[in-house]
Image 1 (cartoon, rainbow, N blue to C red):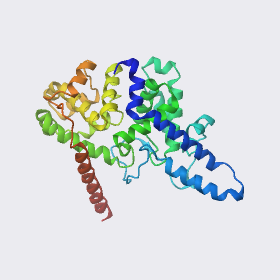
Image 2: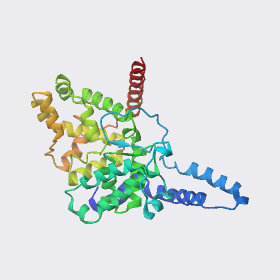
Image 3: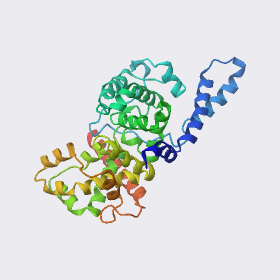
Image 4: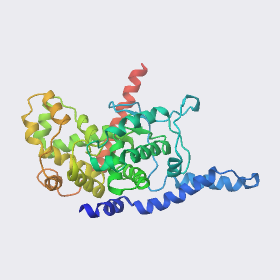
Length: 344
């Protein structure tokens, strides 16, 4: 996508304008339902509350995925259900207006956000000098307060920051993050247990075995856990390993092709880095390689590799949804077995 058209293209791929219109109605309903009413209007209040409940999960923004124990070591936090245990951070008027209600933001979540904001695109001067950190803080706080089931998890800061850079609007960035997680069916990458991230790691490993067998064999022979790659690449959508136009082009692929684009970019990066992977002589070498991943390819070469029939393949990954479903079931069964063992 040409840089000058990226804002419009990303908005179109996410259905941002239509979702924003629905969100505006839902926000108005939330405000109306929270306003004081006369006793005689109690029936109207009940109708408004039901409408709010129905519309607030429109555009694929809701999720009733099961929760599981925290895994993968990522810092995340959700608001505890017991109000007596919550020490809340104060929400500004602008933040309340963005989500249409006061919401709840625990001090624990606020502390995580405050720690992550300064280290988000700290080297991108245009972002730092245009008030990006202040905008990012508000977007992350409203995301966490407006969706307590999701809360906040490290890496979400990069998603919000990328949208702020391209869309140049806080409300649009706030909504775009929610739409993106729905488009990718990736909310459970960031929730307790990170079940979908672990499932997608199985999918990535299977694709490596089929499409880059020499690379897979090298990783397997040295006991390298592909979860190290998926947690580092998927959760922030490559924002910590790609820079500038290469990162933007990777996001073009993801926003156009959805979750298939995520796997295509990951396979392309591994394919382009295959010589270094095959030369690694130990597990530690692989850890250092992926920890400080340096992609020498141009943005054009990265996108070309993502559709290279010799590695990733030009044809759509038609069975990707089924692969993810089976992998998620596999993870769920493992979690249940582990829970039973702990119970004994």
